[in-house]
Length: 230
Image 1 (cartoon, rainbow, N blue to C red):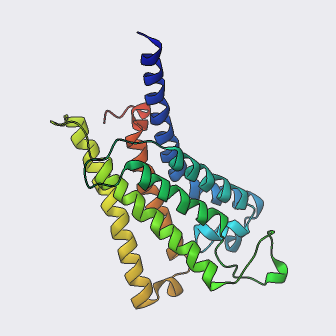
Image 2 (image 1 turned 180 degrees about the vertical axis):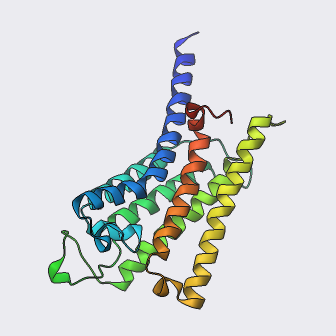
């Protein structure tokens, strides 16, 4: 085996690892924010925020920025398969997703408290910046659902039984993200559900991050480390 062969193997292994890291980060992200906030202050109004984005204004803010930046950088550096005619390339989708999640990290959600008591260097009440933050988050999940539905399900045919299982997981995660986004949008716009249930957005984000994380974890063959043969 020559040097080129070794480089090819190492490249493949590194991309499996990148996918796995993205997957585990998506799964662990919201819970680590809660744990860090809980350790700092056990009062429910502090460690149990209305949305994941609100943790920016807690002691978990460093983790919030760090984890989202990690996901963004890995997505931007990701290199997928060459596109077929008329398709978006994997690189374009992950690059867009990476940029959008970096926007979410760097443009915080509006601060709901008094600006004079701002706990972080950056606080704002701007609806425009808030819409940019929210729009970037929605765009990120749309890009990742497309990745799961259209890109992860591809491969050489005929598919093996394990590949068919993985494709069912990819489709479940992809359509799940779409369904949760659509349903939560309807509930918020038509019924103001986010005003009636203080933590609705938090749980919507947790569900979508879980689906996102599972999809990437399966793509990175991370579940094989847990003894699952898919």
